[in-house]
Figure 1 (cartoon, rainbow, N blue to C red):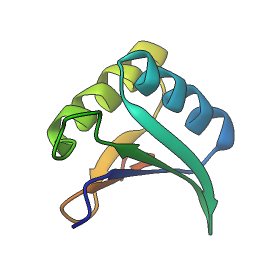
Figure 2: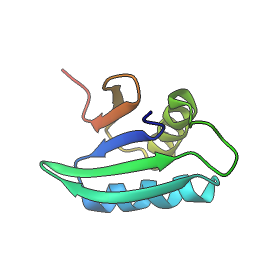
Figure 3: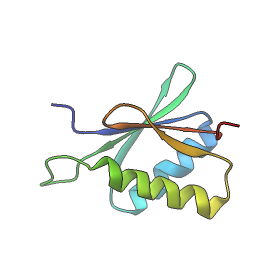
Figure 4: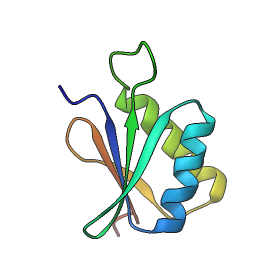
Length: 88
């Protein structure tokens, strides 16, 4: 069963900063290069069955707002998000 939450990011600098923010909140996360950008896999912590997508989404929203970045997290499937510019 897939238990990680995936976050797609278009730019390495943002992906690296978000990765640091997630780990500062006690989440285990890994960064990988994927076609078209970067992907952060947020893993469950010790003793957790899974990481809730809503928890990760809230952290992404707070991180974007704090940095005033022109992106929004878009839900992709049950356990994923793509951080992209808002649609016009």
